[in-house]
Length: 327
Image (cartoon, rainbow, N blue to C red; front, side, top):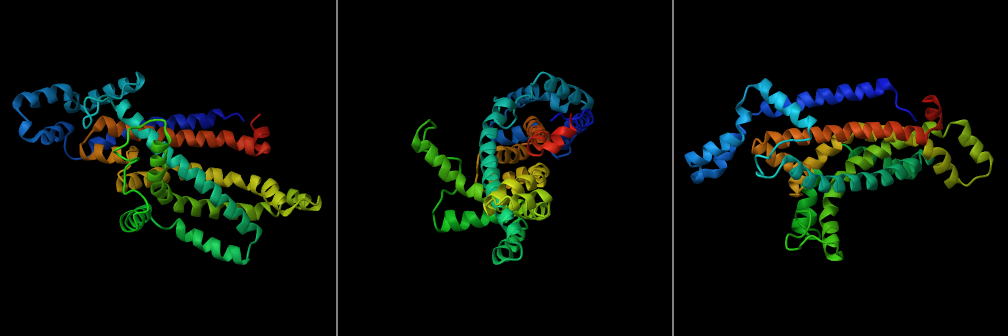
């Protein structure tokens, strides 16, 4: 399916607006990155060290328009600058390392929640008014009403601190050396269980509710009645005829709530000390690390816009009617 030029224009305007906002937001925070670095040095903050810091990050104290021009120049050359907190690492190095963990966490949570939520929503709609529906549907509303921070803190206290079933934090055992072996991957899996399950309740509840509503409408369509008339099994009619066409609103909802998913991942990573973008943004905010904050906000914006663009394409693959309309 082709994406219309008007739709592409909307994405371009949204990206331009995000670039400006990403530049302004960090500078509205009180304090200065240079002051933060000097404070970190403590007694080691000799006059020579302070002058060296100002010489390296002096552009932060320049007039705002010069800072903005330098910012745009950096974006054009894919140079996001040097991190203040993690100096001398570049912003690209810091974000690349953190992005891998956040993508792993978010994608795993979305896939797990999408499978569970879609199946529960389809069955609830198929058995509307039955015992399964009366139990699952209200419970789903409760799930997406609980803030992720409550789920994260409760999970951490109950399953990690009290019962000690899972690790307290980190992405893997700090005593292990990363490598392609079962020991390392097993540690990564164990450390990811609680963060993934923390993100999942909200997503499962959202997907179940959306899928159920969409599925109820689809089940009244003529092609579903035709599928039943052909003598197909209930399972085939439910998923091949009903669930497939009911997925469109779920995919739309996924793109719309992606920002909320990233927001939930920020809280989750801070609670579990998980080395993803959320923890990186938190530490960068405390250190007034403008380059990292700008780079990460821009990265999250690109991820959200990219997800919406991908949903536009998937629409045409899932619904042939939309694919024909785009020709």
